[in-house]
Image 1 (cartoon, rainbow, N blue to C red):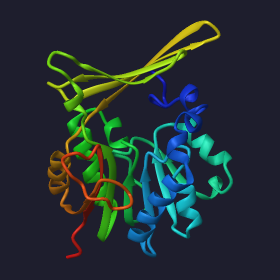
Image 2 (spheres, one colour):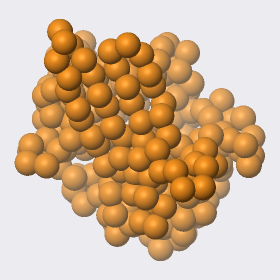
Image 3 (tube, rainbow, N blue to C red):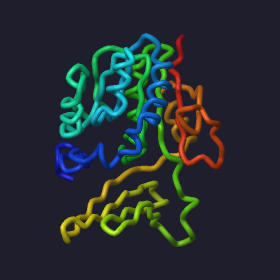
Image 4 (cartoon, rainbow, N blue to C red):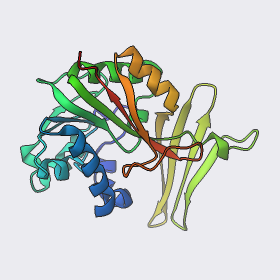
Length: 246
């Protein structure tokens, strides 16, 4: 990878909103914003991986001051081009280590973005970075999938998740290292294009330990943004850790 925007450069940013259209549905975004606005109260929010502003823009319209961190200038350019996008502060950088001014009542990472940090050390650094930015009593929220290893028969490493006449997509797991790549093959005008993005999957209990290392403690865990109970059958979770007030 040589693009300064990481794996979310211009070619991805140009179609990101359309390719993630399900996540942009009003009922989906509304549930996220309701949850986060309730935690923010009258305080500021910090979004790690702010991207094109799917959550930040409606959250700001709810009266919550939002600041973002993102490595991809191409994604942030899309945010800036949207109504209200020029009023949201964004710092360009790696959200595991990048510092911004001030403190926040809530920080959040949504839509599996914690997995964009591809080492355990980087994920731990992210928790420590967030803890340094939270005010006492502040909350850190992560939305992320539960690793889908139950879908892997013995000896298999690939889980397909999309198939159509012009597009195929699959995840490729390495269970020894907790590495997974999402791979996309597209055919446009008779020409094939392949793209692969690496991730590191992470377990709920592992995230809890990372939080403890950063001085945070788990206070909520749900299956989704409308607070459905998290169970052994849940495919993802929304977890909230708190920075102690004392």
